Image 1 (cartoon, rainbow, N blue to C red):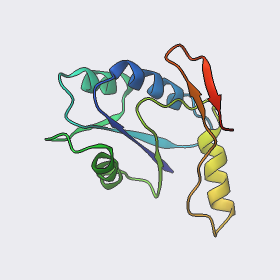
Image 2: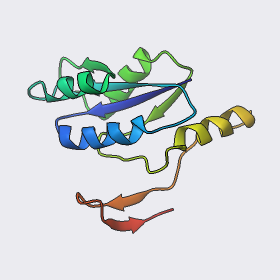
Image 3: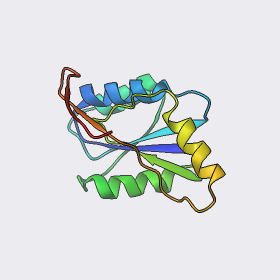
Amino acid sequence: MISIVIPAYDRVDLLRLTLNSIKQQKDVEFEIIVIDDNSLGNDIYETCKEFSVIYYKNKNNYGAQVSRNKGVELSKYEYIAFVDSDDLWESENKLYEQYRVIKDEPNVSVIFTALKYIDINGDLIKDNS
């Protein structure tokens, strides 16, 4: 139902947190596609193997925009969710609720959510919700 595209460059520790938060989604079918923007080493590849997600490595460092487009190209579902490699999804129903809205409202083509800024320890810096 939904392809989740994550551009990533190094920062495998943050990517791991992101993947953990996504894997907790309930009541919706999804695939996760990580586009490695030519990181150094194999850490992102190994992490993707561990999480059983689709992995693709760019031949050069193109930036997040090109990586997102590559993820869309590789996706198998009609709906795309973008998430950065340092983001966390707080609710286990995020994808389901967004999918429900887009299916129930024919005039809706883009959905976004409020956000909270946290530091590396998970402490709240700013709440924009």
